[in-house]
Image 1 (cartoon, rainbow, N blue to C red):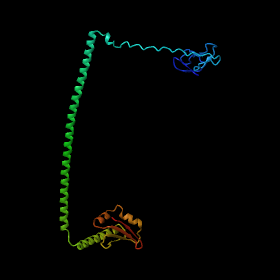
Image 2 (cartoon, helix red, strand yellow):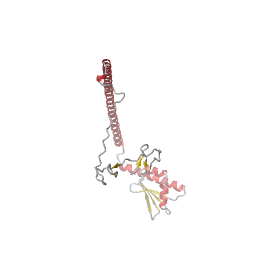
Image 3 (cartoon, rainbow, N blue to C red):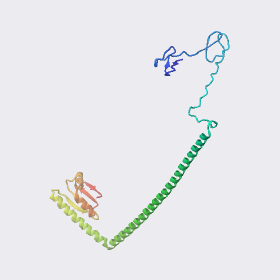
Length: 251
């Protein structure tokens, strides 16, 4: 079994006689021997396995009694009357200090509780004020909505009664716009035939014998005229070369 240095607790091999860490001598471990024949016995042996002699148990070592600390207070019987009175005064002082601290804590808790109640009341009042402001704001919005609906109703009442006449005017406006757009394209060297087609004239139709799909995309991309066309009721754009047609929409 490996040995252990009693000075630095380093583990030593069985044959070590000095610690290779701190240099202290390593004492040989005590062994149990038979008092009759001197044979070495294991620690748990109760009889010698060589001669049969009983192996006495080692005497129990008396445990040293702990000494009282040097600063331990003397027993009450060793105190004088003056020392007893002094001890009682210190005890009363400690009681008064404890009671004073307790009173301060109770007063502080009461103050904090009062302050907390005031804070809760202020928070509750702020919530009520916020709710009242919300109610007033909702009432103002409702009144504005009512005024807006009344204005829309008045506008609808004053609108032209004859829907057919209104549609006719829009158709004329779209045809006029198609003619103007055709002139713009001609000025740019593009031989397009532009018309307002469809039952309601809401389809802006371009015809060019050389037109292709990509020409439709070039027409409608980034062109302010098509934003205007949408504003007067055109819903889609059709490009045709007479044989094929391509549609872009709704605008």
